[in-house]
Length: 260
Image (tube, rainbow, N blue to C red; front, side, top):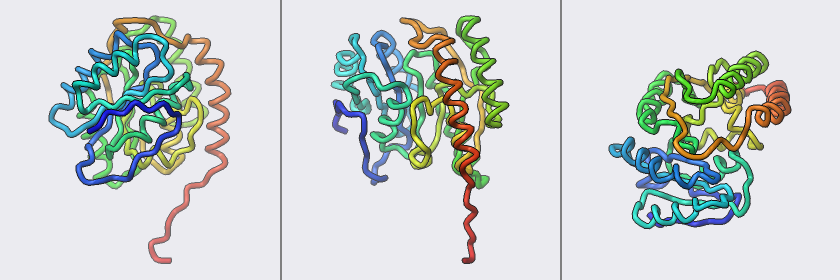
């Protein structure tokens, strides 16, 4: 596989071809240079028995992230690197990564190393089990049972999840977990907007889909600090929350008649 260094916000990938990876791991990063090598190693180890690719989307980092990714990509054929010229936000990075991906399934991870790639194989099994029962599209959402964050951040997440759950009825206890798994084609059918990564369960349900929450591990951040504070997330989240609620009310999922 050829490594790519694409400075673009909007990318497309060809439809499924022979030799397509089973899963593409999309990791958005912004100024996470020290966390990149150990996370790439952990992803490769966790998926060593599954055909995969790793897509890092550098969202306009100003630290050594581009150089670190270039060095890793030179010796790891499964690593694809994509770079935004300037920071566009986490959701834009996720969208770029999914559009670049070739895998049937997408797993997303936060770039800070707090999500554990070792949980991905079980999430893939959960998705296949749900699909075997006829549920599509399926979103497998990680649920961080034991959070390794500050008390303020944990309380902020509890409040946000409670308010979001009440208004959107998404039935998901931890929508803020960056570890999620879904089919690429299903994601590309969703409406795309800034901060959409916070509302994937509600958007999948709006599309007639099914959400399964599975327990996942959560690790302390080894390097650096979160780029978003509790109040930053709260301010943008309130506006987005009402926007997604509006989207839910303005859509009815068509039921296809098998005998037209």
